[in-house]
Length: 130
Image (cartoon, rainbow, N blue to C red; front, top):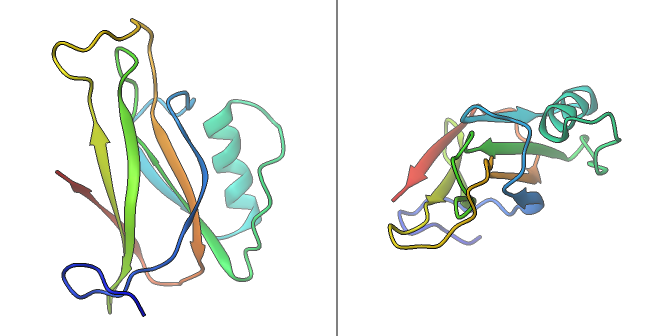
C-alpha cells in the first residue's frame, strides 16, 4: 500500500472530467454514491440531460470539486491525491490562478475536476493545498 507524505494510505482514483467550463457557478464539492446522485451531479455540471459516463456504484463513488466562477481563462483546479484516515476520506486539491502578467482570454470560466474512486461509507472532506 502506497502512503502519502504524512503516512496516510493513498486511495487510487481516476479522472472522469477536468476542465474550465462547468455549469456549477459556486465554489463547492460533492459526492455521488448512487446512480441517481450521479445523474443529478452530471446534469448540474453539464447543464444538459445527457447521460453521465458509466460508474459501477457497487464498487465506486464519485467526487467533484468545483472552483466556481472565475473572471478569465487561466484558472485551474486539480485533485492531487486522496487519502484514507480512520475517520474520513480526504480529497486534497490545488487551485491555480493566472500570473499577474499572464495574457488570458477575458471570458468567464468555472474550473472543475471530477474523479471516481473506490466506494467508501466514510465521510468525505476536502483540503486545499498551497
